[in-house]
Image (cartoon, rainbow, N blue to C red; front, side):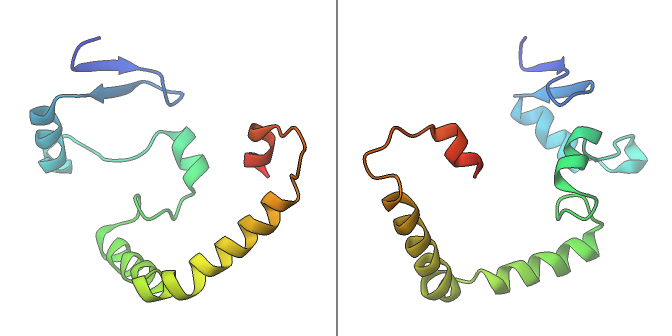
Length: 108
């Protein structure tokens, strides 16, 4: 395949690049130079219209600030990690001595 190739990995024609120089060029281009950034429809369907990666820059900046304020280090340590640990311990205890289908459990 080489460093740059076309694939249908996301359900539509997609260019995959493993070339750092080409990636840098693409990331610095803008719409006037012919690049219109976006996701394939399959990814847009999964991520939703208002995912942080596909909104305009001012909205992205505001969303990022809100997300960062919700997930600061103190909040993660004091609230989320404690809740996650409690949930995982109770969930794992329910498996006691059983044969577990990891794929099915992961979906749940």
